[in-house]
Image (cartoon, rainbow, N blue to C red; front, side, top):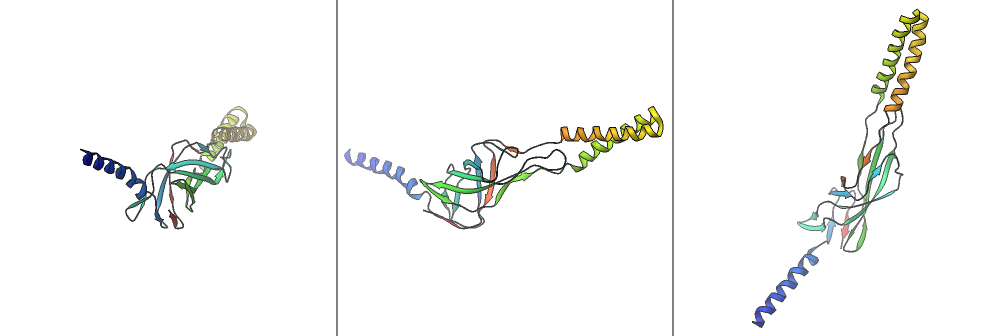
Length: 192
């Protein structure tokens, strides 16, 4: 009976120890994709370059068939590029870069690509608002006051179209908490 208890105790101890021993040691080579899930939201409207954003590794990072960075490891990201949306032609952009990962209580600096997005330009849409306003104003002005009325109506319509484009065209980028982003390593990092 004691032999059986001893065997079970050793088995349980090994079952608890082996994952800890096998976990997180090795080298992450250049070109490895690391998926990160953000812990907090970040917006192109309020973010600043260099601002820290926290998150965690979204799936195990393996090398040579061995887990080097386990899923759930804490990470720190920084805002690498940001631009708030302008009223007429400036598209919003927001990019983050993975800067560090903590594995087994140790923090490792890591060099990666940036991940994020830029909204498409609004030039054609804004031109449509402005041109449509000018054309509509010219038609109304021509009906009301002839050639001189058409010129005044076109100017007034263009002004109204510009105001409409400015009022409706501002759109920023927001990455809410739990956004998944993928980064690619640019330098080898050894985790031990």
